[in-house]
Length: 302
Image 1: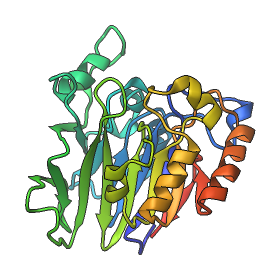
Image 2: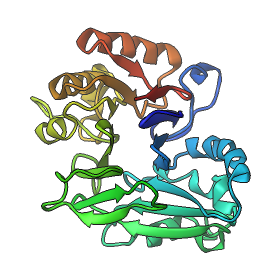
Image 3: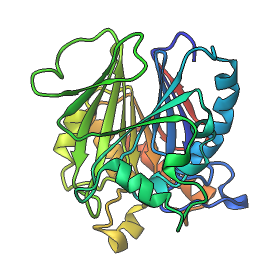
């Protein structure tokens, strides 16, 4: 990852619930989690069960870091459905005293992100509460009126309002946000991460529209990488319309319209085995050749 402006690694690519086993070994069975290294900043997109293995891998890096300096990790939640937060209590760096976890996500039904995460880790459901983690936890509510900017040597991003700012150049890294209204019950946040003219878009738990999602097409325009929900094949979608998820056809058509460089199909249905995902990948490539079905360990560097 050294020398790249943007490095992306997939740790969990499933939706709804984790599915370990012989039939999911190629693509993996963990729920949503992607690691992004943008210059020298660590950004994690969602905290499904995939974040558990990521956390174990990161502990070597944390132990080798300067103990006199805090070790910042930035986690962005697209939304707080269980498959996107369930790995957080088991994320090893959250228990390390030198780590600073900057958590960013939406308010849900007027409830702060801190309240939602605390409720999920209440003693009814979790052996340890959010307030008992040994790391320093900083929690921020964000929405689609915000722009986050990491300056070159900053430990955490500045949270700014987008009006009149999002077109300004920065020498650091910036994250733009779009709200998706097509996922029950409160929608999700879509993120665009930019560094030195390189960009990736994370659009999970979104459902396509007839003619394409014009707002998302514009938001993803010319990105090096688009990670797009593709939970269903077209046949199953007929039974699941309105559930807030897309097909590989919707993802491929949007990637073509947005002129992105690479497309990754994401948030796989837990009922789909490796062979079925490979078939979907092949069909999607007929529509958009640079398509890959998301898999644990998949990497991109720009």
